[in-house]
Image (cartoon, rainbow, N blue to C red; front, top):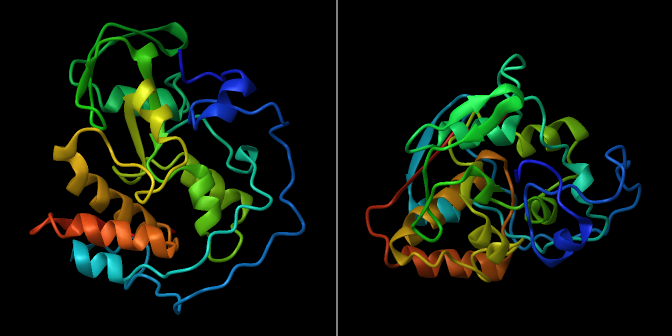
Length: 243
């Protein structure tokens, strides 16, 4: 099923978040990374890890620092996934634990976390999926976008923590493989879900995830989020800063 690695050729065509590139998982962090220029002072979220915040969408967007993206040196292997998940004894990695947690109708679970049956609603396209093998678990803010948006280079431990984050309901989401690969590594200036009813929730979740992990936005991304927010009166962003 799609929680396993897929061929590197497919990984080049899209952002299949359940794929592992051909490079070794032990690929070191590049020693030289292209600097980037901040257009606004960094604004870290108020509060400390564990302090939950709720803000109106416009206010939440205003709390995001604005900076140029910096892709040079990015490799998916910098973000170790999938790890053993929340329960080391259940035989399911993070990916499959997310799939299980988001099932509308629970699947049967056999040895090795083999899933059969069950059903899911894919939020991006509002499709009902009845085969876990047709799901991808998407990093809501794609790993490449996270790398672009890190205000200072993260440690390997923080990158692994993001890539397997189940402490927030927002970081990871099970969606149809087709919708995830359409999204690829695009930000809201480049891609939005085909289900227009989900746009406000999508924007709020994107912003919440960036605030949780203290990530920047570029100018085009910010403008796209503000444009979406115009149609999202009353939408609230709730997040908890990551440790």
